[in-house]
Length: 141
Image (cartoon, rainbow, N blue to C red; front, side):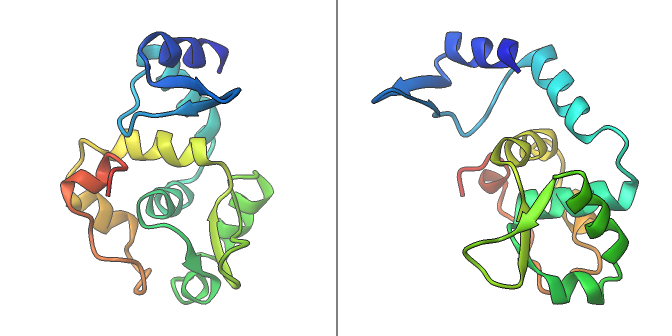
């Protein structure tokens, strides 16, 4: 993580404002450091758990009711246990990714993939948003 922060700071993607470090780039770059961090955070996930995390990274919080209808209860339980998701404090009854950095890493991983990849991630989650426009993959939409 420290190497990744150093890389972002040297590239001007991570800057200090009023004593707080802020990631200012919508498109994150980090080479091997980013790949290693991403791999360590999501290693051991089952395919459906990873699909659900990717859908949350791209589409945002999802109602628990939708997760239940999509028969993803076991996956949600595993992601809660791993600390990857949490109840969304701003939206009662919804789950979201627990760490903003994980959202950025997953979006970075998916940004070069087509909308078909997003549709695959969202399979069964009928209340998920429509596939994003290409600029949304970069976290700018």
